[in-house]
Image (cartoon, rainbow, N blue to C red):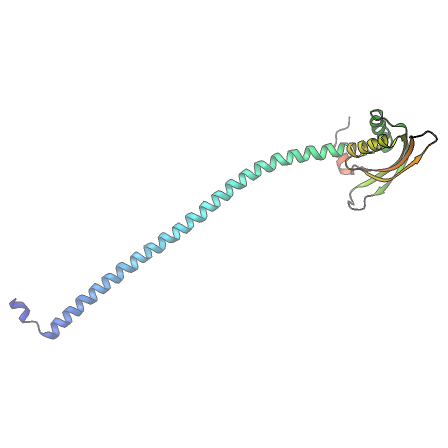
Length: 195
């Protein structure tokens, strides 16, 4: 303890202050380096979270692409089926053949088809309508069934007018309707192979 006697009060205060300052500097350096490590750790954690979200989005996109491919095939089949019911270039011949074939399976009689005209489609500029006039006879139920079959057989068609008048025979009526059939666009006709 004899060594402490040589220290004066000022020197001992300086020594204590110097020791406290050194401790403070060491603590500050430790805190800053630790804080930097935590900051870096948080930044890496945020990057990992973002990459995890990107991976999940990529997996969802891969599943969606696979589902879209299957849907695209189904849609192409649907379009092909509807285009098959559209009027072809030999319009009147095609209409006669299709309506005659349909009328054979229906209870209506005396089905006559008159040549029609081609008019521009109002909502679809790339398409045209082929409007033909049909006349047939039957009772109300038979007429209704035939009209329903026309609508089902030609899903893209429109019935423009339907007139039903009585005949001399009781319960038998004469029906006349204008049927507008969608004409296949020229681009679809060029891509089809000739049979």
